[in-house]
Length: 321
Image (spheres, rainbow, N blue to C red):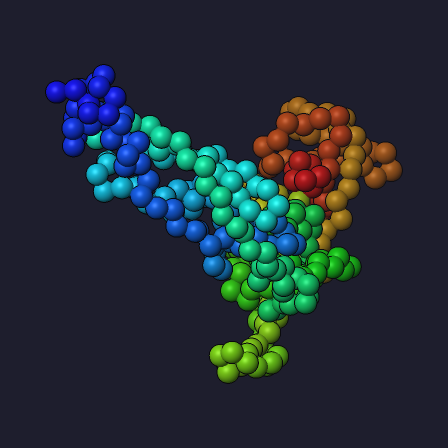
């Protein structure tokens, strides 16, 4: 039996061919407004309070608002979105199946976008913050790591101030302040100090609002520095939750916490002889023996510390790191 409308194709459903049937009963039954908002400051899209993080997520949000007719089995929905002033225009391509045959239809969708100021931008404008993170004894490595952690956390940064021995952050989420501080502590060791004080009352929830202060102090010692620790010449190999030290006399590593006042002066001298023992140009231009337990290749110069009348080579690569 032929289609009663076009008279050309075979009737598949309700005396109509699939093409004519889909014209009479389109694939899309209804289009629901997704209710999108756009922040006038950061230009981000939101559905309610939830931020739409990517163009792919925006397309997905629009696609969920397309309600298909129950007769069809939807195979795929694709959308291409363009923004025009206070509205979005989307070209939707819907692919479906009916009676074992695939059908594809295009639809143009338009919906309004409400403008507002998002929570984060509103807080920024009001210089809102929930606490401070103070980082002390910070090397360039620690500063860079801290900045990376803050950026990746997505926390609102109210202010960042470089101080003599580190950085002060005012951040908009107390939970993330603690997370960043813990990660710094896990990576570099040191100490954490936390405190909080009553700041205000939340009028909507009638709850107390506290501001926290977290002070992270990195170890005062630095990688590559040398010390006289427990009567042994040592060099700092790495700093984490524990400080790893190299015994320059024995060549063995162990954990310890040397103090700044026990630091040893690192000197540099020309290497006069490499074998059978290492000789360097010492005091009064006389050759002196150098004990080397670093396991590093020897160059024309060597760095060392003097202790109890002997010279101990330090690892120059650590000292310069």
